[in-house]
Amino acid sequence: AQKVTQAQTEISVVEKEDVTLDCVYETRDTTYYLFWYKQPPSGELVFLIRRNSFDEQNEISGRYSWNFQKSTSSFNFTITASQVVDSAVYFCALSEEDTGRRALTFGSGTRLQVQP
Amino acid sequence: ETGVTQTPRHLVMGMTNKKSLKCEQHLGHNAMYWYKQSAKKPLELMFVYSLEERVENNSVPSRFSPECPNSSHLFLHLHTLQPEDSALYLCASSHAVGTSYQETQYFGPGTRLLVL
Image (cartoon, rainbow over all chains, first blue to last red):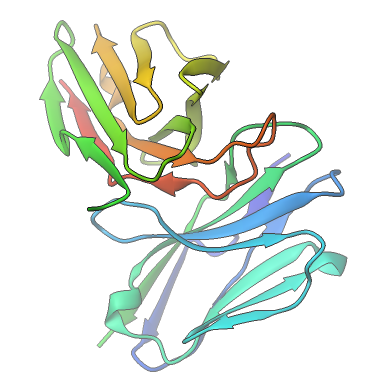
């Protein structure tokens, strides 16, 4: 079973629109970490946020905000007033403490295109 | 200076060639990773090194041979590759604490490999 699901393959918005990228995860661990990364066309994965399973507070960083809801196993990412520079592929990832796995489990990514 | 660098950024090789990918991290981390990103698959972990010892080999074919001479450098030696090995190869590093690898992984820009 897929552990991190990003159901939106591609989203296209016009500049200044708000956009939400969905992420649903699956784990049996009680301690785990969730991440969002941005991959611009250059290829590098840029770290955006890390959240542990015990901290359900939403977080805001400039135009970015994250909504973590354990009840629905979701960790959604909202960009407010999108800009062309936000165009990229965004990945949600899961790291599980209890299983001792050393890798991040990535979703398949959501490609965001922001049109001017 | 950027945290994680990779060279070369682009590589074209024939199936009989031998080449090496290089990764260097300047973040003082003690764990390094190789990931493979193919066109239609999620990011896949290939290898994990902690304190220069390989701690995970994710069923990678022997035509990929990693080397970690010190905690700052990681290589991926390639020989007799197949066209299906064409992908973006990403290096990452993090700070591992004991057996916990939950700290944020920081990625390099990747090497885009084409095997003819």
